Structures are given as structure tokens and as C-alpha cells.
Length: 103
Figure (cartoon, rainbow, N blue to C red):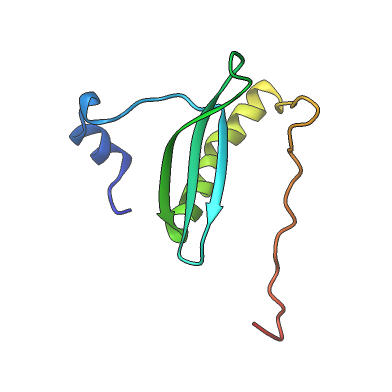
């Protein structure tokens, strides 16, 4: 978590990184970490071909959520908010709030 974006891009060559495409995600969580599974929908198979998973501690997941938000919001500002087809869940999750008097 300590490396800057400049550090990462200057030390990693393209042949050291796997590049793939995903238009579907699934999230699995445990008490210790969060796993994001990536896949690509296939019209031929009428299903998702799940191909990659990444497991990370919650601190990293929280940083990922932050950086995703600050990279996606400008897209919405300049291009308009994305609209999803019916049946694709895009409801904002209800956030959990701690009770100020308890845990």
C-alpha cells in the first residue's frame, strides 16, 4: 500500500502483468478479507466465464473503493450518469451506521 502510482508504473513492465477484461464481478467476504471475482459474459454460453479473483484485506478494499469513486465520478460529470438496463441491480446500498451509545 505504500508505493505511489509513479513508483508502480516505473518498476513494472507490461510482460509482468496479466491483462484481461471483465464486465461482471462477484464479491465474497469473510471476517478477515474481501474477494472480488472477475468474469466476462458470453452470449454464446449465455453465462459468465469467471476467470480471475483477487483477495484483499478490508483496509485495501476501502482504499480501492475510494480510488474507484474518485476515478468514476469525473466520467459521470463529463459524460452523464450511466443508465443500466432493467434487471441490473444499481440500488445504492444502505450504509451501516454505528450506534453512538453502543458498539
